[in-house]
Length: 311
Length: 295
Image 1 (cartoon, rainbow over the protein chains, first blue to last red):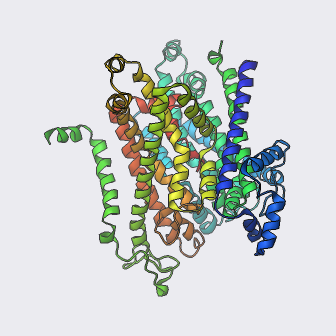
Image 2 (image 1 turned 90 degrees about the vertical axis):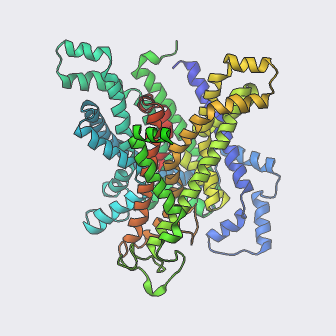
Image 3 (image 1 turned 120 degrees about the vertical axis):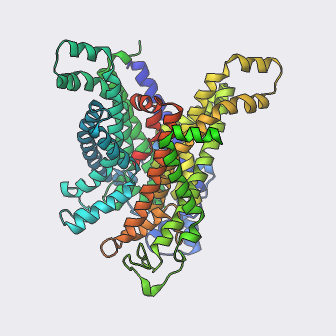
C-alpha cells in the first residue's frame, strides 16, 4: 500500500465512524423510553417527576437534537463516551476491561479453527470425491447448519454436567473457562473454512506449476504442503481478517451462554438495561477495531502477495 | 407436466431436498392437525415431565407440551424468515437497481451507506437496533433487514451495470421508452431471477439469525412458540430438564440444514461452478455466510 491509499483508507474509516456515530445517536434519541427513568430503574429506584425533570436538564436531554448531538460528538472526540447508567463507570473503562477476555476468546477459537480446517480442507481436496472427502463435507455441512447457541448448551450439558470435566459457568478467563466457548465458536467457523480451503486447493491443483512440480519428481506431499497450500491460503487471508474482526464484536451469543465476561455479553446486558451511552460506545469501538483490523489485513495481504500491489 | 418430470429426474438431489422443504412447510401449515396438545395451554401438574407416550418431547417449565410447541414454532420461524427474506430482497434489489441504473449521486449515496454497513459486524448493529427499538419479533426482522440489505443492493447493482450498456437498452431509450417501462420490462426482468435464487439460498441463514436474536431475548416474546426463545427458556433447566433444550435446537438444526441444502443444490443447478469459484475468491459465497460466523 502506498502512503496515499493508507491515508485514504484512514479517511474512509473516520467518515464511516462519523456515520455510525450519527446513526446510533439518532437511534437512541428516537428510542422509546426515558433514559433518565431507565438510569434510575437500573439502580432500583423510582424517581419523582421533579427529580426526573431536574436530571434531564442537568444531562442536557431537553436541548434540541443538533445541540445534543454536537455535545455528544465533542465529548467523544475528547475520549469521553459518557458514563454507563447501569454500571456507574465511564464507558471507556468498562469497554477496556472487557476487551481482553474477548480478544483471548477470539484468538483461541481462531487458532482452533485453523488447526481443524486447514488439514481437513487439504485432505478433502486431495481425496476429491472419495470417502474421506464425503465425510469431511458432511462434517462441514453439519457445522454450517448447527445453531451455535444449541451447540454451546449441548457442550455444557455433556462436558460440564454429565462428564464433569469443566466448570459450567465461565466467569473467569482462565484456560478452563475459555475452552468450551472457543470450541463452540470454532466449530461453525471451521466448517466454513474447510469448505473454502477445499475449494481453493482444488482450484490450485489444476495450475501448471503443480504439473511442473510433479514432473520434476517432487514428492506429492511436498507439492501439496509447500507449493499448493501457500497459494491456496492467500485469498483466505482477507476472509480471515473479516472473521477476526466480527468475532471481536459478535461473540455475543456464545458469551451469553457461557456467562463469559466479554464485550458481547456486556453489549447484551447494556441493551437489556437500556444503557444508551454504553451501547453507543460499544458500537463505535467495535466498528473502529473491525475496520483497523481489516486495514492491517489488507496491508499484510500485499506483503504476502506482491502481485496485488497497485502500481 | 412432462417437462417437469424430466427436470426432476435430471436433478435428483434438488428434488429430494425440495420434497424435504415441502414437508417442513407442510408441518408449519398443518400445525394444528399435527400438534397433540394446545401449545399455549399450561398444565401446572405436568411441569417438566420427561418425554413419554403422551408428551413426546416432554413438557416445559409451565407444563406446556413441547412437541406441540416445536411444531407451532415451525410456523413462527418460517413465517418470520420468509417475511425477512422478502423484505430484504425487495429493499436491497430496489436500492441496488436504482443505484446501478441512475448512477451519479443516487449511486454514490446508496453505495456509501452500504459501505458503511458492510465495514461493520452485522450482529452488533442488529443487537443495537433490536435493543433500541424494543424486543419483538417484528423489530428483530427490521434489525436483520437493516444489516443484510447491502448484500442484495451490491449484487443487484452489479447485475444492472452489466446489462445497462447493452444495445437493446440503448435502442429502448432511443425509441422513446419511458424509464419506468425500461426498468420494469428489461432491468427487473433480467436481474430478478438471480436475486430470488440468492434470497432462497439465504433462508437457512435467516432462520438462524432470527433464532439467535430470539435466544438473546430481542426477538419473539413469550408465550409465542419460537425455537430460539424456547432454547433460552430451557437454559435454566439444563440440569433437570435437558429435553427442553434438546428438541427445539434439533428442530432449528434440521430446518436450517434442509433449506441450506436446497439453496446449495439450487445454485448448483443454475451454475455448477459458481459455488466453488465464489468460495475460492472469498467473494459471493463468503458473502452469503458472512453474518453466520458472528453467531
